[in-house]
Image 1 (cartoon, helix red, strand yellow):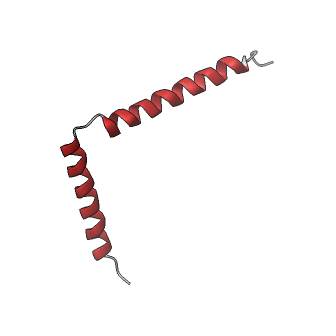
Image 2 (tube, one colour):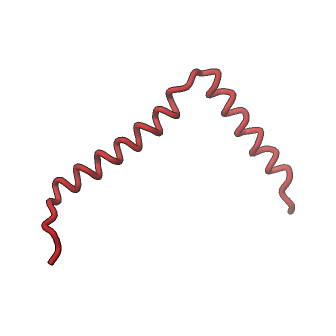
Image 3 (tube, one colour):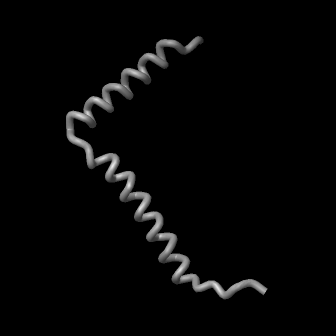
Length: 57
């Protein structure tokens, strides 16, 4: 037979892991200076524009 599983403990562990993942995303998103964020946004937009320009119809 399998091991006994405490659902509350499993739920809390899952929520804790999800919170850590969200925190890492937020650190990457909000932990940068404004100039760096703007530069990254412009580079992303430029890359998307270049890619759109190279599409074949």
